[in-house]
Structure formats: structure tokens, C-alpha cells
Length: 208
Image (tube, rainbow, N blue to C red; front, side, top):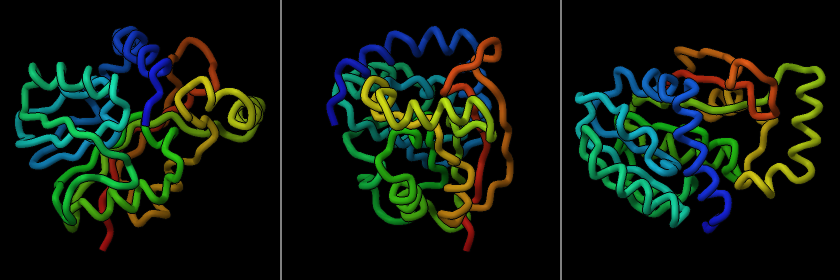
């Protein structure tokens, strides 16, 4: 999946967002993770530096060639073993029950089908495994939610790598068979309102 213009824009913007607070979100996202991890939509590898030593292996899946090349570079200095591979959220290159943790980080906004992606996360997780999520999501009903719906129906997905701002991702995670155990809702950046401002960060456990 080639989105070269967006990929380059994201790679330039991501360090600035990390300095503004996203790096702390990534650290919180991955704190306490252990064992085998599959990271879906790894982008340019912005999460890699934040994996704790209890993680034994990360399979980082990224479909966009430019971002995947950047992720390879980040993997070379990561504190844990990281293998970067080509793949998509709805066809992960891993066998059933291969992971203790699946990480989705700013990716469920842009997948064509959230339920297909979450079904793949279920498939590759071991029984009782964890889903760690950090996503921007639909605003509460009101003016911003209206702006999000208009943005999604017009030019936003075209210019922002297929991103959709008005997705109730927490509800989708629950509908996919996960039990959310921890959920934080916040605005980021905190000092201004944007269509992609409402965020969630948390973890869910595979039911059954």
C-alpha cells in the first residue's frame, strides 16, 4: 500500500508530536508489555524505543514502503529484538496464537475495515492475550463530531493517508470480542481542537 506523500509527511511530523507529548503516550501504551508482540501498522518505528525489556520479540508489520524503510532503521537501535515485515492489518503474516500482545497505534483510523483488522488481532493473540491501543477517535456528539463527519466524507481521508476521524474505536474493540480493562480518553494536542484531537489509550483482554 503506497502513500508516499503522506508517508513522508508523517515521518517529518512524528518527532514533533512525540516532543509535544506523544512519546509519553507511547511509553504508557507499552509499559508492562511482555513476551511476543505483534505491532500492527508500525509506521516509521516510533514505538520501538519504548518497548520494555520484558518484551522478547516484536514483529512490526507495515504496508507502506517508505515508512517500512524508516522502521528498519529504527529497529537497528531498538532496545528489544524487532523484525520489520510487509503486511496489512487484515492479513497479518503470523500464525494463530503467535503473540502475547498485539499493539495498534494510530492505525485503526486508517484501516479499510476495523472489524477485519480486529479479527486478525484476535487470531494472532494467544488465549487471554492483550490488545494495547492508542488511537484518535470520534468526538462526543456536538460541533466537533459534526466537523469530523464532514471531514471524513470529503477530503480528509484523501490527504491524510486514508485516516477517518469519526470512528468509535473503543466500541469496535468491544464488538470484536475484547474486554477493555483500562481506558483513558484525552485531547491531543491539549492546547487546540482539531478533528483528530480526541484520543483513547488503554488495553483490552481477549475474551474466551
